[in-house]
Amino acid sequence: MKPKDFVAGLRENVIDENISIYKNLFSNTSIEKVTDQYWKNVLALFQSLPSEQQAVFFELIRQTMIDTTSNILGILDGVSTLNGANDKFALTYGKSQETLTGDLQSLFLAEEETI
Image (cartoon, rainbow, N blue to C red; front, side, top):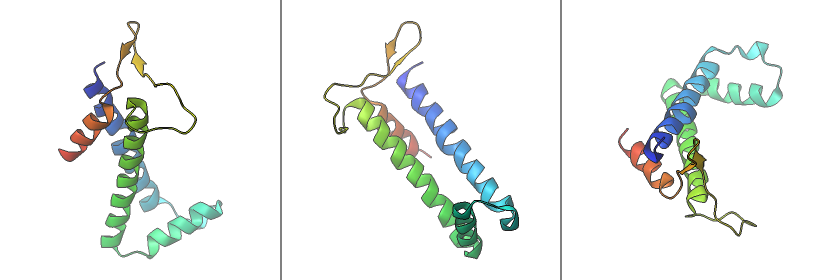
């Protein structure tokens, strides 16, 4: 697996699939059947929004996922620091232990810009 394939997989599996799950949950969950108070509060907020604002709500969730993934990749790449970590991180793949880290954050953000 090449670094570009890894970030494409992250975008598809973490960002695209999860935003689809969120859209489904928020659009198809009956608040009367929810028992968790946190989920009930968030669902009530969502349902109180006009449809245009519901779309913005999902854009916010998507951007939060993008920012979080980018920050994690920046730590793995060594671009950002993690308190208490004095050594470099290395993400490897496969039997050959091919190193993927080094440019993951840039590749991920570049891929997001093309969408």
